[in-house]
Image 1 (cartoon, rainbow, N blue to C red):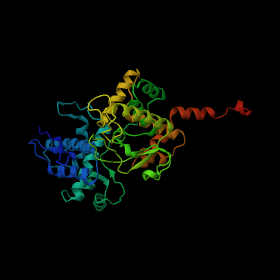
Image 2 (cartoon, rainbow, N blue to C red):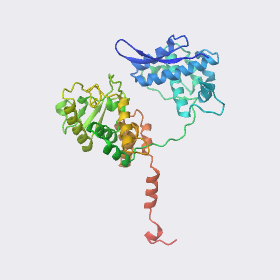
Image 3 (cartoon, rainbow, N blue to C red):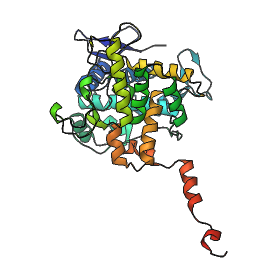
Length: 378
């Protein structure tokens, strides 16, 4: 069977993105055009182009398996959904075996729909085909959206029902265990910054020291935001750290975060007095000392601390972000506040934290007075 594959591309300028190769190792021109547009023209993350390229490789594999040009495959995308659920390249799965769950299948279909929209907007695909991909779609609105305009979001025709997945937080005692297990100030700061500020790992690894305004008045730094805070800025960084949100945002810092930061900076100046890097997080205990930490290094720190603290379940970076958001919601944070603090593009992404936990529901019910307490008779 033909095998398409995703492939990393590094331009002479050190700009990176991913593309798709056909079985003869030739670039699939339409996919490459889309992926490069998403990366350059829409300021997409390299990791997103990697995910999209892998999804499109599967799509082209499927189209080849049914001997249908991809431009003519839209009427059969329902079969593609089933194929994604049950196909593995290394074996023929039984019809009852599921090799990709609903969430993964929906993510692949989202990439394919984005590819179709782009192809229609640049004349590589008849825009009327989008009426087969969506339940309701205005092709002129699609072209306007590709040019950066506003339009109503169309309803995808091929989408599986995803089971509700509860938010998995890092429990307070687990966070305390991580902090106690940290043997240096840098690792303590990583835990506290993610727990108290809700930063993504790519945002934390991509911070420059100039982004940190841990002073009461930052006006002399050209910043009008009052109080201790930092700025999350999207950049192309040599350590491949990337802020997911295109829009710069300000995140306030509390005294605990500032204290952990001061201790880390003092440690850094002892270990790396030259201070060669403007990145906030740098290697201090492994070569090359002073080089910026990669995002995966944050995962390694948390895995090491989780093991040292003998936690039943290792703490991952996003669990600390979830804990921050849940704590803000439980202490009166509204959807718009959460959206700004977390850097979400849509307020619906923040609303999941506003749903009360079972513990909060029970606590409210138990606060309702009984007839015995009020003096009423049954």
